[in-house]
Image 1 (cartoon, rainbow, N blue to C red):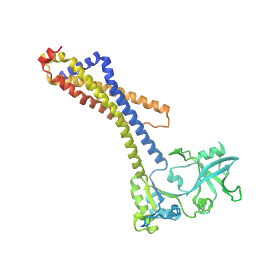
Image 2 (cartoon, rainbow, N blue to C red):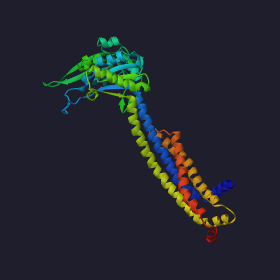
Image 3 (cartoon, one colour):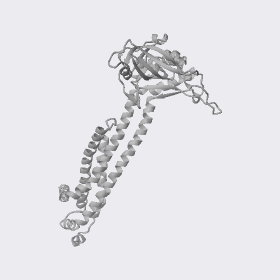
Image 4 (cartoon, rainbow, N blue to C red):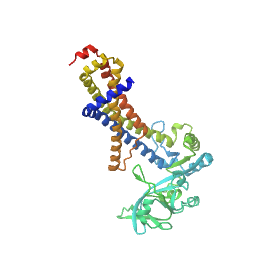
Length: 422
């Protein structure tokens, strides 16, 4: 019952001094709101980056070329993309078999001027193999993807992105129509000569959106062999090989299997001298998560400074309150109040201030995040239950820590000296 009396007395004291209590809570409100809003921005950035990486395809193991240094430290000249070939991709596919879902190879062909249906556009052209939609989790929305037969005969067929289709054909269906890839080469005698290659459109990819600032819907996919022989002249070489593992848990094993296969094929005894690099998506996500978590902690720490300032304000006000109520403390002790009763009363006042300030801070922080989303829709914000719990928990802890000294000071007053106080 005495605890309830202490609680009632603490609340009455806060109600009597409404303005002072409100101004004291303001520091905590701003601090909690800052933590909520800033951490929400950090969490949103982390979630957005993770979503962007996964939009490239899930459970991916990527092999890219790597230049090799000789013992003297010199690097080999020439394009490093010659290190990987279509034969490497086929070897991985054959040897790993059912332990992976799919594998495909890519050959970049650069940007080309595109003309079709009387329209002119500029887009990126990439040579890929038929497993591209499965590996990249990117289905065809209209038409169909080219087949292994198209790859084997170097067919001049193309699957285009939704943005490319919209720019060239508007709302009309491009399936079965032709587009021309055009490159102009300078002529020493003046002017230039154009190289024009026609492709038949067989499919349109489903809309995917931008990834790290690059519009993936604005591209043209052609068979890898066609890109090699017709567009780039780099027969059999590829820029990357992408393997889709069965699950996230098997990516590490798939990575090691792929590395072993390529080391054997490239006749490399020391893995440190490998002319290729194998990365899995888990490693990429882990590295990016470390960066975003550091960023989130930094933002939370900045907001935490506001909470610290609010806590100092609470200690200051509670010390003033102890001085103002010295006579009251003396009377309570004279009529039988114990030291613990006085300590509990002032500690409850401090916790009530920070607790209520924490709740109002959550509402203010939520309002700030909604306003940010209205002003900048592209900026993701994410308020998690953990963030809310930590913010309120820290605010209450601050109430205990910064209210403990004033409460102990009040409890330690001698009744006779307190009663003599003016």
